[in-house]
Image: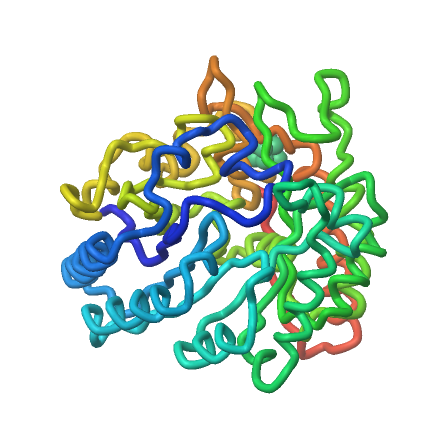
Length: 391
Ligand code: SF4
């Protein structure tokens, strides 16, 4: 039985008003954006609604997640975005849509906030840290840092009722920065959640900070662990850090929700501006790997479920490398995120390029959580404890 699709990343716009140097859309070799329409057309929006409706009916789905991306999705404009919401909501009448949008915030203003409030859209802001951190990579087409403009967006978010829609910050990790300074800064902006993202890279194109001689150095884990410790001791309950929560959930035997870690089958597709169905858009970090040759104009969403490339994300342990299958962290880590496993020789049958980091981080979290549970158990004889799985 195939896992049906319940989450959609929809690319409304193929261009961006920033030119972040690490961006997998534009700066890691993929050029498909150049031949895309600039904006998703109304015809494509209508076709998308019908394809989603059909898929939901076929699989008895009554609740879905749609996350708007670009390029920069606010370049779609308020009128077109409103029409997008209206079209989807009207065709998918009776199906609960959880809306999200991921923006760089540069164009955010009161009118956008009103629209997002109307449709209860969760807004994620992309920001890597304070100005000196953020502006290293998150620059415009003239090479000018974006921090000051994003700061204005954050102020907008806290005006009137904007803070109700501000769901979180997505920050790409730069291991040359001080982790706690970055964490304290992002926390000071009062997000409900922070997503720390590993930069993209694979066995052919190593991520920043990794070289053929330093692959075993867990430098990303070393950056994340001080943040985990502070978050776990002081901030759980009022601030979500999804990577940490996911690892804890997987350690406790839970199903997990992130596609970046764990063995569970994914239920997410990406729809490109021209209606192409892509498995995972971050595969653009390996030019051409995202292409499935499916388009909503001629394919049902069920077609993606049987596509061999999409299937890699459904088969769990059976498609992983021997090293991962024998690893005692397999059920928690799952071999790491798909794009980070790729090599020209073995395709996706490799451990993650961040294996040493995942190993150190998961073991650290396991130790700390287990010790805390042990103390709780000692202090409260009625506490039954929780299982912590490592294999
Ligand atoms: S920790 Fe490394 S070897 Fe173990 S499952 Fe993850 S990527 Fe594979």
